Amino acid sequence: MTGFSPFFSIWQYMSAIFYHDEEQKLMAEKTFEEAQSKIARPIKTSILPFTGFYEAEDYHQKYLLQRHPGLLNALDVEPGEELIRSHVLARINGYLGGYGTVLGFDKEWKDWGITEKMAEYVRAELVSSG
Image 1 (cartoon, rainbow, N blue to C red):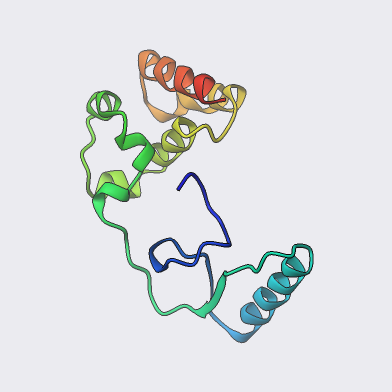
Image 2 (cartoon, helix red, strand yellow; image 1 turned 90 degrees about the horizontal axis):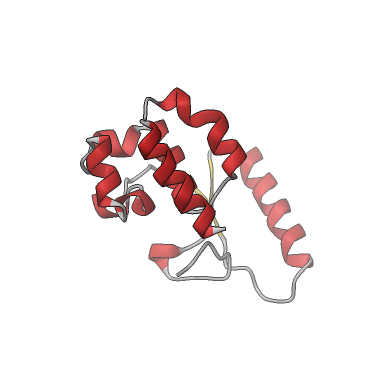
């Protein structure tokens, strides 16, 4: 699987909108109907009441970042709470996946407390993914 698809119906990768109240449910249903009216293929996104949040297993957390063990080692991070909760690691994970621009990366990386060498590595990965 290379990305999100609202047409995928396997539970583990399902597309879902979770609502907390009736207003959110109605908004989700309206948006769903508008999207479905624009395409012929059936959208399999489920609209469900929110009942709780379950974190994925460690190997799913910041998956793209975990594919760069040298960078993880340089960042001194192991799977667990820090990897899950870190905003900086979420940003790095996104850039490693090609989400963002070099200009955007260069505007923010200095605020993260990472070294120039780490930034060069992430920048090179971002360029190669684009």
